[in-house]
Length: 389
Image (tube, rainbow, N blue to C red; front, side, top):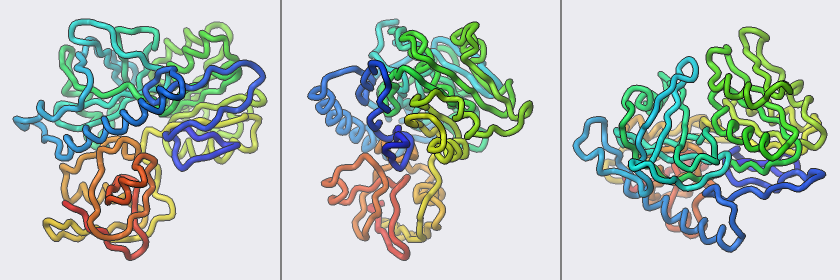
């Protein structure tokens, strides 16, 4: 999801890249959804196959197993089996995992910005950005910040995956591709450095004029400091800004440092993304590409009601809350993953009522047949949606 602002925009920072800004030198075209550099015909074919593949995964995982359930290992996405080979504490509450094939073989290629869908031992499905080196064909690296108030996935990643643990995965897939423009400003907030780090590595390799500003509460909370400093070298291309040292950042001031026409790649918390999107139009940058690692706030929502056909339960959905959150309070086993309307795991079937579709995944035929991604889609004020649940 990487809209460009200006000249074009999209509703979220994770769905499909727009055309990059026109720089003065050659630009490497973005890779396809799976991180591979292919021709258009192959890209279209793989996109269709990828949609079918992920929907099969979603239907198989509609009811993820609870922690400790005997069938937890049986609920698995199609794809690779990976082994945790190394765990490294990268910063306060941040751990990185190095994943390899069980026999140490080569792994599928990926490009900067790609992510993996992991099936955790509990049955939870979570997306994590790859933050290693795309040139390393034998190792995937991800990093996870522990969120005590999250949905439990990060705690499980920290506490239940020792070295030697195995995981099933689907991917890599790429919805935040890097076009390696001649001039680039990277902005990363906290753990938002994970998709940005491979982009920095690629920019350094191809000779782009790049700068990175890594923002966070404290220096101790920011991972990969030494690695980034090594990439920045003596040229001072990497800047760390900690709130406890310099106060909250002024995004307009940060964007003002971008060279004229430069591309801006940004990943971070929702308030940071909102501030960057507001400020970018007044700055010298030629385009903004961004990715969220948390759900976007509900915009222009209205209250409506969900009715679960099989139980008869009615659930009021407030104007400012996703329907998924309310449904999970009634049924904690409700399957979900990305919470941004692109993976398809939270798909439900609507048997009555009119849906306001806000996803960028379902086809017109799927919507007409009653499919709904409940993490982002809603209904009009006062509407009743009846779900086949």
